[in-house]
Image (cartoon, rainbow, N blue to C red; front, side, top):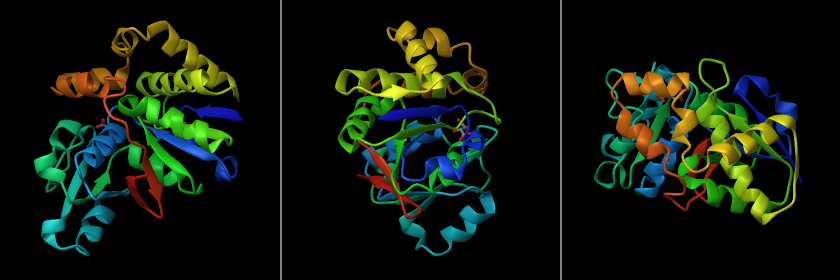
Length: 238
Ligand code: MLT
């Protein structure tokens, strides 16, 4: 088994993804939102790239079965039901609902991954479940980090490292240099990932906007044991 890690979704070609198991990571905060919403009983999440597309798609659902969620520049989109804060996706809000989600990087990374037919959604909240899924599948893996504004983001890379750290306990694999760098970054900060994440650009941007509780939440390792799977344009628990 060979694992490759990409620092942004722009860095990956469709050819690279063919036949691979793909893990999409946007720890702050899109993939943490998706994981939390599904744990709290959301029926499904539909990631879309644009606000207009999200709004148009919502018209094909009954009003009481749909929620629009997401962000631009990390803040809630005008007219949407929910922002990109996982804490808003509580059971009383999302249970039984389809959520159409559009975010700056995370949902675009998911769209990019969709040329593979085996795409799962990872974050710090479900590290062990993703590692166990990879172990069972036993095929080559591509980890796509969403990144921030087209650049490497520490929060995503340390999550890739956490997954690879757990995977190493389960299975032998070979990997590329970014996977190894991610592994050793996590290894160095595994007792408190915030000790390194706190220097990240995106984390600081979210903190400045008042989302400190989101940061605390999204950096909790293995809070949940689910594998969200992206199939035919929709994410559900697998
Ligand atoms: C994204 O998809 O760009 C992020 O989830 C942004 C955010 O945290 O609001």
